[in-house]
Length: 93
View 1 (cartoon, one colour):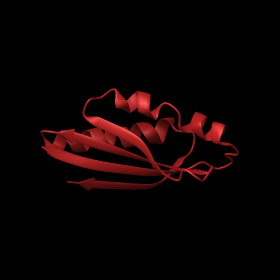
View 2: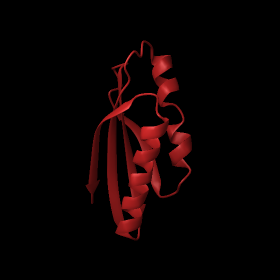
View 3: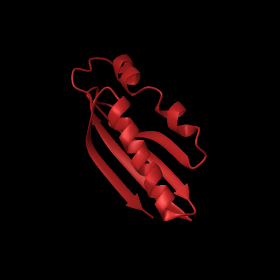
View 4: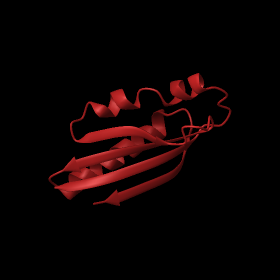
């Protein structure tokens, strides 16, 4: 069993309310939580409007598949989130 912990920090320039932050980051649970190999949560930056941190735990029987899924998640977030990724951390357990 392989486990990866993928953490991404986002910069949300110009975000002025919690409602706007949720709209800009919205849907991550629904998009990625459907996959039984992925757990997702907002893991940091709760008190800042112009930043957000999300962590994804990815599991699988093959290291290559786990790494590939992490790469897919990162690529999709880069394209779909209304903000920019400021930091990415990937830890294999």
